[in-house]
Image 1: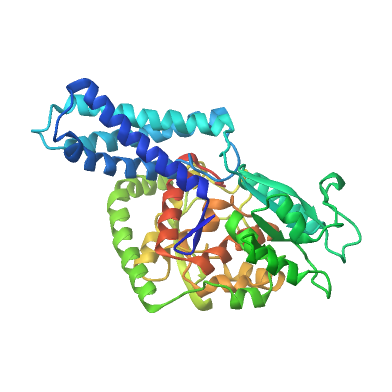
Image 2 (image 1 turned 135 degrees about the vertical axis):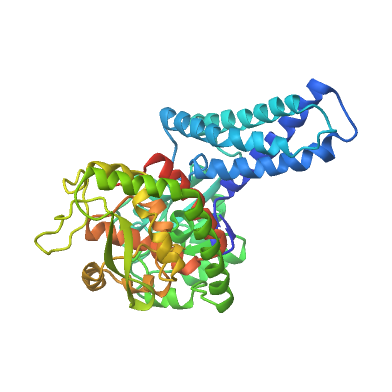
Length: 460
């Protein structure tokens, strides 16, 4: 894992982005040379534009989910995402080619070369998602612990990164029973440092839920670190590999003394400026869509076009959120708030469509303009649910230290939640965002939101 602006990025994903960018640039230049021959001004004149195209294609690839971290995609998913990537990349390719100086060469060969480069990248993406290709140098991880926490760590590692190899589990002296496969338990006849070095371990994850006296060989763990072996605790492991802070394994001390939770004045000013700028741009772009949506809602069912509902914002203050109405006006006629469920019969015909592609969220852009929300942040909840969840879930109130968002890290990482358990799972992503929030993470969330909107992932 590489940490960029407080956010953990898989080294493999970063390497693949760089390789794809290089492939696109090389493919374009080679195809150009084949079509028009070598020219002294070819690389400097066309090269800068191709770098811009490569950057745009990488953003599109991220938004369409071609670089997603979660396991392998099926062939149908890969082809579908590749088609989406092409649909978005082709107009960008045409636009970039128009800015190339006319005196360089005829634009038609350049257009074909650029299309060929983009196609090469998309084909490579599909191949890599299906081939199961692993990096030559795999990271070897030893898990210190043999209980339920250790088993959970192993599952997350194997699902999150196929280039990680778990060399085994080294049981703590205080663990009397094992929740991991016995065949993967390492012998305790050798010390931890000897075992780690013999197995060529790159990292040790300390996966203990109880840390009673004698459970952790602190001196041996320090020796491992001094000899170049990375050592991380349970909470840091989930933060690095899953982009979440697990409330069942974290404690207040870790939250207080670890890095993050930076809410400086400069950060707030810049974020507010970006919120205003991009909200105005999005409102201008999607104004026709919002007008059409308003008309369809009015024709489809009785009732207002918009609905307003009280939500909890930053520092526990409340505000009225605005959305396009997607449910019947009698959705909560008994007066009891409840979450939307799958195939909810309260949702109207138009409502089901606009919820799937997130159009119902567009009016929240005006909440952003008023300063009540941000473009990116935790999802704002109703006071009824906030009171309930604060009592049942540790650290739930921490999410209110930042402004709620139209979209967020939890929204793009976890499907719509309709239970307390779902709320806890989403909170774990929300805590990660609050702890590691940065403009870089905001941009990443916005890119992934595009993919969520286009695929309808997680909608209800």
